[in-house]
Structures are given as structure tokens and as C-alpha cells.
Length: 82
Image (tube, rainbow, N blue to C red; front, side, top):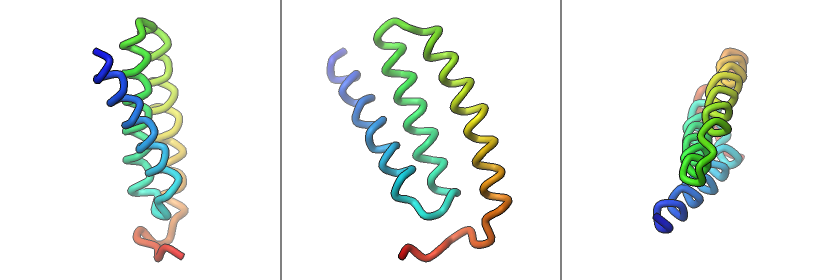
């Protein structure tokens, strides 16, 4: 069980880094979803399932709306990293 919790923590950190380091919102949202699922899985393993459910609703409901908005404003789906 400890290895699973550590794996979820690592996925949470890597997902956050993926969001911060991607110049394209198309690939940044993959990191956002990975981080939110890993964070909610981490909370589920700690026994606070209601908080995890609320966070899934907030992250995947609210943040994906922001993603769709930012994608609609982005002119280039594959920007050059500077």
C-alpha cells in the first residue's frame, strides 16, 4: 500500500510539472488530468473519499472548461518552445 501511495505522489508531481512545462494547452491538459486523478487517488487511499469526489468534480469540471476556452483562443496548436 505504501508503494501505491508513493506512486500516486510521484504521478501528482509529474503531472504538475507537465502542466507547467508544456507551451501547448493541448498537452498541458493531459498533465492536469493526470495530476488531478493522482491527487484524488491519493486522497482516496487516505480514506477521505468525499473530498476526493468533490475535487474530481471541481478539477475535471471547472478546469476543463478553462482548457476549452484557452484552446479556442490559441491560434497555433503546436507552438515553438522558446
